[in-house]
Length: 378
Image 1 (cartoon, rainbow, N blue to C red):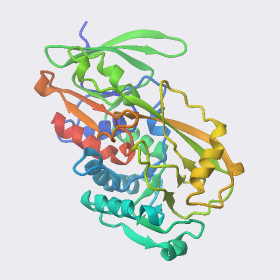
Image 2: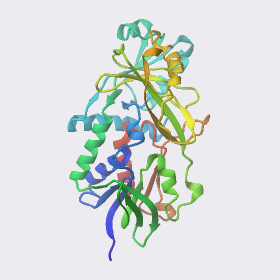
Image 3: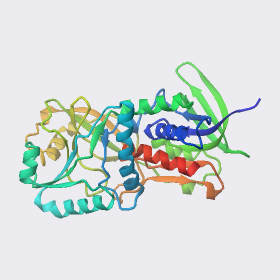
Image 4: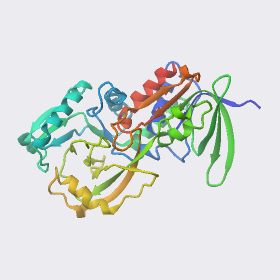
């Protein structure tokens, strides 16, 4: 019996996989082609994509000429345009990166890095200007990023899936990929479709295969025939906890401390959701396994970190909210690593694309990352 065939199989229905599905189905090369998004979970965005700060980043922090910098700056524009066109909730609140006098040089260096990345709207604030804008914030200096914002990430992913399905993309939840083997034309994908009541094997063919599996990108890469184990980057799990604040927010915009010197994260910052609920986080801790429990005993250490820029913080008003896990390519203590978007055509596997280490600013960059995939497959 002939196998079902697709032009493209996308593994993973997080924000990246869904964005890739939409941009491929909108492209001249893949419009009206057979595209399937395969997802192990019951629905989309169950891991990284639904467990983050929901911030639309400006592109400030990332190394010059990196994929993170280029795709964040372009992705921000595409994301705001998408939200406006399709009625996805977002708010351009702006963000303050605050510092004391002792860190003024580091803040100036951050400004220069942002300018090099094409972020040309930052504003330097002194203490008086900062107090006029955010009276509850205590710092000597701040950078204001007016183009930073927040987004309803669930509504965004819903819009991506809805629009992609309208273009004919198929969504296959409850489907785990067990093996990907090379064929004379493309790949054969062995899966197992299973829910609470049933389990059955399903095999299909595809011309192109795109690994957008996030935390599982490395383990999926090991299931692809011909892949060289030494060529699969190690993915390090870095957990971040969030605490909600049980009082009205004293802030109008987002407030960030200077980024962590160990390059693991951006520091425990304040964010707002679309309903105006204030939350703080994430911290960053490398872990050996996935566990989304939030340790309530961290309340005091969170309060101490927050007090460096919000002295009126009360630890009693901090309550465990949720946690997320980032797929970092850099181990603890190593310099931050860039995204990897790898095309395997030169290695004799045309049509194979794998994405590794898509952490922050992946949400902001999602549509730009998807455009990159379209170009590599076209």
